Length: 294
Image (tube, rainbow, N blue to C red):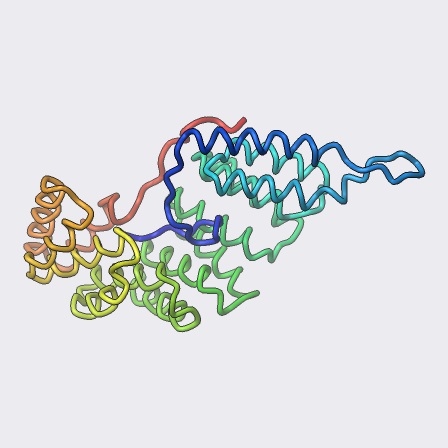
């Protein structure tokens, strides 16, 4: 499966499961710290509050809330940081990222565009906007953002990988693979580039090369293993495909995937590519907002 480029780690962070008590403790701590941070400091002469000195602390609070799986709280704190320093890009990019996590894609687009009005070549804003356009199934607009980011930082593996995803979605698979390979050369340990290269190779019918690409990183995530299983299954090795799937799927899920692999084997390469592109497990589709942004 393609791993979408996100601007949280940036691109990507491992999935996290946080127990509710942990979230509650984090929120309580954030509230206490926020009151302290927002209280400000007197300059000793005029009595004015120096909000500028607290900006970094507020940003750390916002980033911490987002990292702890609380985008609603993060969004509110980023807004406070934006009030403190209206010319700063970072709070707007943070807001946009929190909006993405809430599924508010259109609002995220507007926020990233606001950031780019301040700093037109800001790499995180360009990558973030590209990732939202991918989520909105607008790969042509995403490609333009990644190309802009690469003009400033041509060796950025995140932008190169995002560009590859956009090209794959546009059916320009050879160009996509070139972009993934470039990302892997600049950052050999960057798993998303190699994982997406593996899936792109599968779409193109290069199964042996896909297996060689994905096998060394099979332990990186269930998504990589699922793509490796697909490569084995579609090339005829259902036994190995099943062994890989059982690491992450129950018997029913494994059987369902193996049936799908078998169906793919009866199709032409073009038909297989179309089937995979229409399968949300491999090419995720945008989801409705989970809740409105506060």
